[in-house]
Length: 120
Image 1: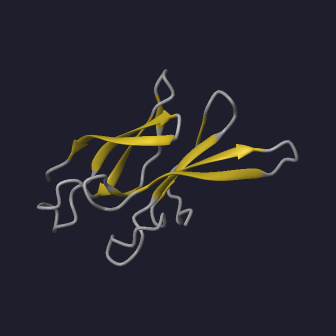
Image 2: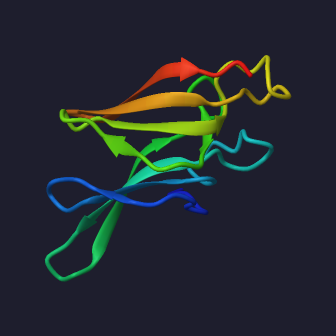
Image 3: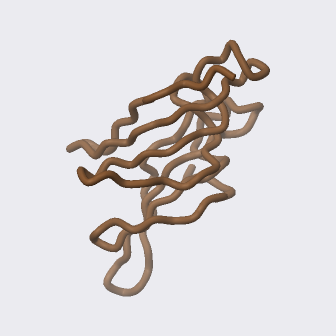
């Protein structure tokens, strides 16, 4: 699934692709019975249409869940963002207090690294 309920703004890369997050969707189903959100890319096509690619689907576990804010790029092309839930599940009502994450492009897709897990 590609996600649902985009809440934050979009950002462009140097090639004109759009990137954003969805609060729900993504396919894991582990955030209170619904999916935990995703990070996506929209690439423009010569005919004016756009092609969507899901870069990461959150599980609601240690990788985070329910991204609500926008993303930022660094000079190397890595994406950074935050989630509202996930991380250390022992706090914030058992859902975790959210994470700061990095998505790095690789030859086989994108790889997520959690930079910080909030503890409440």
